[in-house]
Length: 100
Length: 494
Image: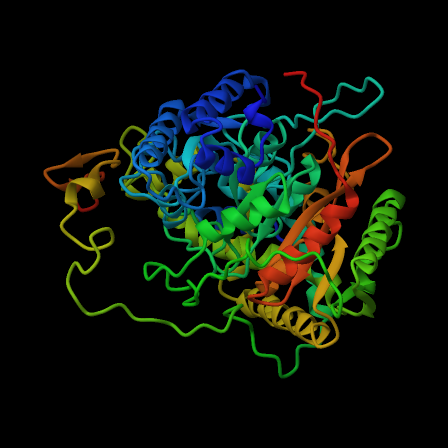
């Protein structure tokens, strides 16, 4: 499978990366080269093989159902959460208007 | 007085504990080396005051007769992928420039708890994406090594932990943290003549480490020798309830368990790693390694890892797929850069911010990841890659029924010159051909210096072990280290 300019532009939009026409043009052959190369995976017979989702057998742990159990990952740290926000106001993340 | 910056972690720790010198003297010596090495561009931010502060705490503890911890009095470099409270953390990207974490990564916190101090934040490939340290927003790291014969070309320190490898080999720090997703600890260690180990996936917490590919990323130490790696890994590793993929297992005493006697051990030599047209000097160093391990008492067996050639293409689907998902969080809303063009809406802000904030290699990988995960291609690419990954892991499982550790070269070549591979992403990716399979299988693997090539550049040997058997890897590494007698270091030009 090879990608054309329209496909690359569509992927850029899905990936939320603004790209100029020239950048899209430049990326078409790069992506095609890489995708052409990874296509050799199609040669491998994977009949009956389950896709690997965890490299080390490890059971998924669930956190205790306790509010703010961990002082670092729990709540009550609004100012810390907002400390690096480019436009924090009134205790919220500020964004451009999204509704008319 | 001895030059303190020539000492290993073990020697520094002992000297501080014995009172031969103080931790503050050590920190000052390394701070001076860091300040004088701007030409290497190994640090994004230097934190001399942090190093002194930790050293003063260690000296005060000693004065009171308290125990100093496994890394007591040892200042280290921290790859700028680890969140450090109050100190800028950027992943070498523009999008995180100026980001000051309000929290500390578990690995760095573990190291401070063990008595280590921080010399600064080390440069890397942007979001750890690269094998040469040429994708950092803050400029290339220059290897302290030069080819012999008056060749003045700037060489790659390897990547992505290239700031770490350059800093350790140039004596700017006795040890540094690295992270390895597809070889990012082992390849830079090999390029700069130092030692680095990627432990079993899950040994070191990923909490507070800027994520690249979550199922692969694993932190590890980079230091001048095997013993130092064992010491530092013991301090970094450990169960962390904050990371759902953290292994709930005790941390073994790897340092105490070091033993270079390999009698009764079997070393597997994977025949698929002996590739057509292999660099003759790489092949020779591999043969040297085989002879050294035999000399240490090991039996050498021929093994097969039949899916080796598919590891890299599988990696270059899986890693970008996970990266495209992980990097979706950088959108200009909660932290980092925001680019809000005049009159733009939310979607335009995301797209503009990400266009400005990510470098070309990061964009390329996000694009590949988005493509292989998109509707219609998910099964053909992503699912197929995950199945191939299962086969690669199975190859290793089968091999480990015949041997205890595997010996292979770390990289297909010695360090290349900066700029040599940047025009062709694929040729850059191929540099990780020997490192990636162990990453896909989550196995512990280390690189140990094996000697110099005819140009005077270091070559590394790689040891891959069974899951959870870091001790076996470290011991084989120690056997090689003792026989290779590698003492070369870069001549100071910076």
